[in-house]
Image 1 (cartoon, helix red, strand yellow):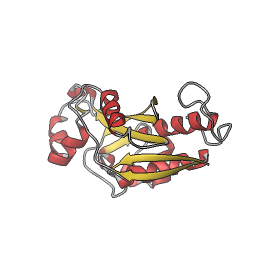
Image 2 (image 1 turned 90 degrees about the horizontal axis):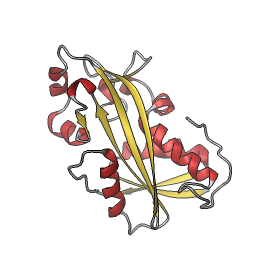
Image 3 (image 1 turned 30 degrees about the vertical axis):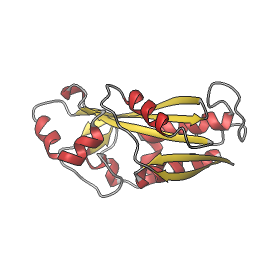
Image 4 (image 1 turned 60 degrees about the vertical axis):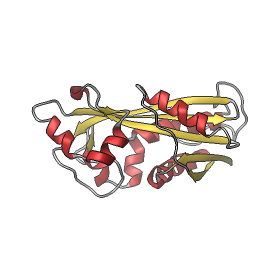
Length: 200
């Protein structure tokens, strides 16, 4: 069993991460901590700042940052997704999308750190913005995001269905594969052996 500390203020994210990593023999411990979210152009830059802020924690430490990107709005809200949602909610997005393409994608950048070593893992899922918010499960933009090939939003399905394809699950599953293979940082770092969870 490999222990990993996930740092976030969001309990929903912690539950998702724990569920995805469990099949890989990784036990997730949640540390609730406010992390810096600097004005940056990319999720990778934000994650780098978060990793800098958790250098005091020992062992494997995982942070992540996610964004909803809408090409017809030049990628907005993107790296500002969490702040925009907290201040404005869904309303302005629906207004801005009138007469525009509703195509969108979620992107997650997960940063794994142990001592001075770190690695980045990326996950994406494509879809579109719903006409209205539907569903009570999940969190964040889940009620307005319909993955490609689905007729339901992420918020209308249970956690297992969401974790099968979500952006965060795809990034975290890569973390699990890397840890299981003992090559989280591009070289042998020890671990429980061959991957036991599903790759995606």
